[in-house]
Image (tube, rainbow, N blue to C red; front, side, top):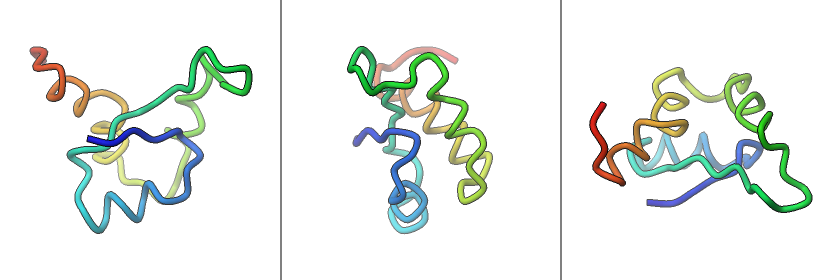
Length: 70
């Protein structure tokens, strides 16, 4: 697994080339430059990511990583 911040340009490329199943969302909280709690908004508004990729990055992959139920 790898993590990404919402504005990272390489997220779409990584998801396309390697698949979206290993990318985790990182809020960068509590760093001074974090947009938390609004940081998910920039990822959900991205047009270069499919809804499936957004769903996986924003939660489903973390569920799998931590072995949480749905």
